[in-house]
Length: 160
Image 1 (cartoon, rainbow, N blue to C red):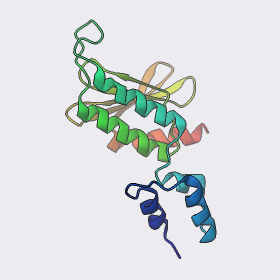
Image 2 (tube, rainbow, N blue to C red):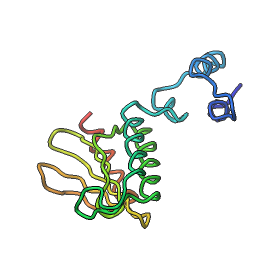
Image 3 (cartoon, helix red, strand yellow):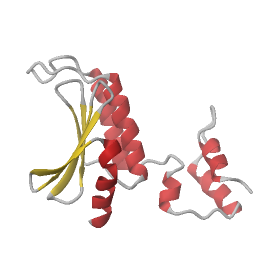
């Protein structure tokens, strides 16, 4: 029987990418029935996350003073960390609402949980991050992804 890891290695194999249809056929043939969350663990990313990643990738072309108020261009580190997080959060069912470059080489990624509740995550050049969760324009959770990610996921699941 083929393991889920084998399917992942097939999907990411060298020069000839395997189509999604072939992966699902292989899964069916080997009686591997999975949930959507398990399918996402193979590396599939939602369309919203793909668009957010493309937008963040475009920030590499910005120059210093991109906002005409002396903002610094986003750092490669900030860009890469934001993209990595978006992929991982997408695996947990979080879809990006908004993303933008920051003034100090950082990247902002925002998730809207409800119209009144949102989370802002700032990815900084020094590889630190800040997670802020707002409710009715007031910050009620503040910390790092490592310390507060569980609260973000819990809130998201509570309002699903």
